[in-house]
Image 1 (cartoon, rainbow, N blue to C red):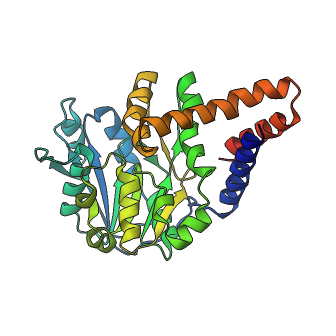
Image 2 (cartoon, helix red, strand yellow):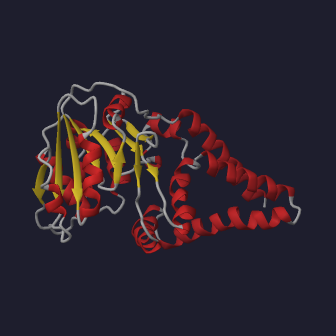
Image 3 (cartoon, rainbow, N blue to C red):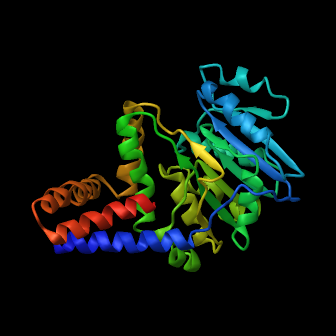
Length: 309
C-alpha cells in the first residue's frame, strides 16, 4: 500500500507541476505573416468534412495560407463533400506503397504538395476556435514544432470513463518542464490530431517518411524531430480545439487496441499498466473505506491528479 501511496503522490506532484508550467495556447488575436499550409488527411470522413473545413476557413490572423485535403480512397463520399469548398485544394490519395501505414502515407503526400513555411497537420474530427492556428504558431516561440492537445470529447458512459485516462497517463507521469527543456526523446509527448511544425525541421528530420511504419506516428515524429536537434513538444490546446475521437464503445476498443499496446511496449507492459490503474482506482478505494489512512491518502492523491489533468 505504501508503494501505491508513493506512486499516487508522485502522480499528483507531476500533475501540479505540469498544470503550472505547460505551455498553454489561448484563443487570442495574433497575426502570422509566414505562409501556412493546413493539411488534412481524410479517409471515409464525409460526416466530418463540413465541421472540420468550416472551422479552418474561418481562421483569423493568417495572412498567407493554403488548405490541402487528401481523400485517401474513401468510399463514403468524402471527395464529393470536399469538392463543395472552393477554398481548399483536394488531392486524390495514391495507392499505399509497401511498408507504409495509411495515415503516414497520406501525411507524406500532403507535405509534398505543401508550399508553406509552417505545416499544420490536422485530423478531420478536430474542431478549431477562430484563432487556433495563429495562436498556436505564436505559442511556438523558440520551438520548431508544437502539438496543441485538443479537448477530448466523449459521448457514452464508457467513453467518458476511459477517454480522459489517455490525457492523464502522460500529464501525471511526464514532467514536461524537464522533458521539453532538455529534449528527452523517451519522454516525448505529442498528439497527431493537431501537430504544427516548421517545414524546414520536418524535412531535415525525415518527416513521415522516416517513421512510415510506426503506429504511434505522433510520438515517433516528435522523437524524430528531437533526435535531429529540434525543439518542441505538447501544449495545452483545450482552449482552442476539441476532438470527438470515438463515437461508440466499439470504436474506442478498436482504436486503443491499435495504439495502447504499442505505447506501453507490448502486451505484458499494457497488462501491468491496467493492473496499476485497477489498484490505484479500485483497490485503494476499497482499502480506504475499510479504514486504511494510507489508502485514503493514495486515493485522494490519484483522484486529484486526474481532476487536475
